[in-house]
Every structure is written in structure tokens, then in C-alpha cells.
Length: 294
Image (cartoon, rainbow, N blue to C red; front, side, top):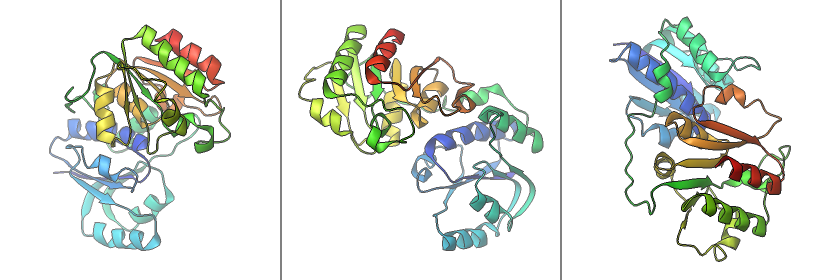
């Protein structure tokens, strides 16, 4: 049995790229054992994936690194993959026992899929395009969802200028613009579900009474698995780029992805299926462009 150790000590969206690599490993070596070194941001979500045998948390402090080194040195790995490219992961791996090691380096040229292909070459794995369907075995039920054939608007902190990257274009709507946008979506589709991120943007709380429509459902404080289920069952996803964009692509769900022109998102999205993207701009213009794509 081959043993793989993958470092993924960053965020959920980044981890979803490692799932493609996990899928490739399992296709090449079905009986292999895969351990992920995770961060506090992605550990709980990683634990929900049955193809991963062990998940080990790395806290962001020096003592946690030393403790992890002593723990991992008890094992001998066939392959170590530094998929996050982090210096902390490289430091820890230096003290471990292994036969092969691959360090992923992100640059301005290679896409994330190119990097995975390069890793496969380095550690003698045969690349398989079916890795793009890394969520196919995840089963979700329509369950308690109130609608079928709905549009999902994931309205998280990335729509709010004060809560997101200040150098990115401000797309935050005012109350009337957002109400008009929601009503225009309902003209295109019978039902709309609105989800949020870790915190609900203030503007959503302000407009709820004005959007008193039985065809609109607000979900707040959902965990990642609950949001994943809502994505799996939607017809169209509208969101600012993030982990949720990778979920939609893996399930070939039509999405309208809001990105900023200052960042090379194509490195992450070059392989996306059923994918549409729009650059961040004033909400009055952006909302019209979104409606035209529905």
C-alpha cells in the first residue's frame, strides 16, 4: 500500500484543487493511503471526504510545526506533495521520511491544472481528465430545500466593499439596486435562493422586508456542507469567485462568476465547465450583464 502525504494548509477553494490530485492518486493506486495536512480554515470540510484517510491539523504557530514534525516522523511516506507551496510546509517536510517529494510552484504562466499534470509526471502518476469530476460520488438530497429549478445567489462579503479587497472594483449595491436585481431575476426564473458567507452583509438584513416574496428564500449561517447541497441542486449559480465556484464547475452547473480584472483568475478557471464570468464594475451595470446571461 502506497502512502501519500499532501500539504494543503490554506483555504477551502485551494483544497478543492488538491481533490483532483487525490482522485488521480486513487485512480492509479486504489488501495493507497492519503493523509492531508490541513489548516484551521479547511480542516472540517476536508474531513467530509471519504477518499481521504487521515486529516491532520497544522495550527499557525511554531510549536504546532515542531509537534507535527515529531508526529509525522513516525511514518515513512512513499510520496510527499507540497501542494500549497507554503514555506511552513516545506520546512516540516524537510525533516520527514519519504521516497519522493513534489513541490508545487505557482507562477504567472501555468494554470493550476498544469501544475497538477506536472506533479503527476514527477511522481509517476498517470493524469486522467476524470479528476475534474472529483465530486461525482458526493450524494446530496433535495431534502428540505423549498424549491426546485431555482437560481442561487451567493451574496457573501465579497459583494461588500468594506469587507473585501480594497484594490478590487467596488460592486456593492444600494438597497434599491439590489431589490431591483432580485425582482429581475424572478422575471427570468420562478425561484431564487440567497445564501451568505461567514457573516450576512448588512444590506441583506435591510432589504428582507422589501423582498417579501414566497419565491425567495434567504439562508444565513449555513455550514459548507449545507451550502454545497444548495449548489448541487441549483440551476444557475451567481457568485463572486471563491470555493463555491469550484463546486459548481465540478458538477457542471451553469455559473456566472464575478471576478476582478486585476487578478489572473484564468489560472484557476481554465478548465471550468458551463462557465461564464464577468468583471467587477458598478453594480448598476454588472446587474444588467448578469440578467442578460441568465
